Image (cartoon, rainbow, N blue to C red; front, side):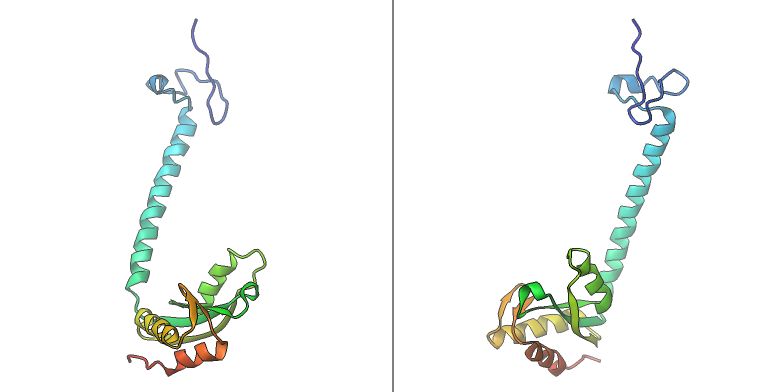
Length: 155
């Protein structure tokens, strides 16, 4: 008896006209239309990964940007000191991971070398005895702002 199969995606009856019989050995029961869409989707995903890697490489090459302070009321007294090309945009990115959308951009300042400035600010805060967990510091907002303001820009 001949096997009768339907497409695993659209449930259309597979015949010799709408299905490649070579797929029978692979147990790939997908009609030609769905197979075409699958190939296009996979190609699009591959292209998106390539674009993403290129965009990240470009982002990483940009030296200038903001050093910023972000707070969240869930962690009273703790502030994140980070760096980004655009501090406001970076804060919006944090909001997607917070169900209450309660991250607040407290302060930001533009520098010609955001990466080195961020490292310098972190070192200064640690040397003053501020407790930290990665980029989060348990210090007063004024103390962190003052530390950032005291850093000289390389321009």
